[in-house]
Length: 357
Image 1 (cartoon, helix red, strand yellow):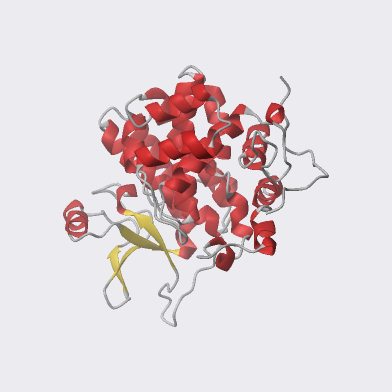
Image 2 (spheres, helix red, strand yellow):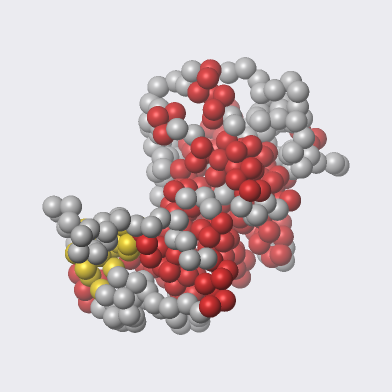
């Protein structure tokens, strides 16, 4: 069977309605530009910050950059200076008080993500950590880098994302129990970067059971496409993306452009692969030919895109949306089977259901 690469156009159009440091080679790879110069006041103190997950800090070792907390009055307070130990007891006090995030200056975001990549690799490949701990770090790292990518989808941060996604795939491929932990950790939220993180995790997990654990190389090539499938939504105005009411025809036209926009962004930044092209362009195609952007017939929709579409639909149904309430897992799966994905591959759906057993 021949599948479309997703780049062909259908003229019919869419249907109506070490911590704290990095070496010279890494510096060359990722670049000096953090994406933002970062604001500073007259005293040189930063005024623009990036939130990061506390689970992404290596306790009792040097901070990769200055770390700040945000108090109730909206002021940032230095928590740990660059190179100074991140005190485990102080971190525990924060978590006991419900604090999940600390902040790094935007100007040091690139430095933080280099540190995060190293910390993640060390955690995932270390026998000292439990699967539960590894899964928490992986999930937190994915959320942090996806938030940044959707804020600034340029090469330095796309490279960080690809590196972190590959380590995530490593964990899912080599530790069968990690799937259960990561599925449990997914937070269903309308924010696009959280949605994309969840879809990436669900898709890799589904690919593992559908393709088999021996398909490690194939899954590593799929990871970036799954996590970055909605990158084109960075070009959708927020008033359209989070609109509470029904979209009008012109707004739908904007939304339907996001697969092509995502493809173009990845291509422009040098991160477009055959696999990511297929996934990004086809994850909204349908077997009845009523999908978008290219109205592909069933025979031309690639299995990779089908995996992503299934995860995408489930995640959307189980997340709060401006226009409807979220569904419970069972209700979402039931609705998918009976009403939404009537054209689904029954074997693929069976494997997807098993992720929640």
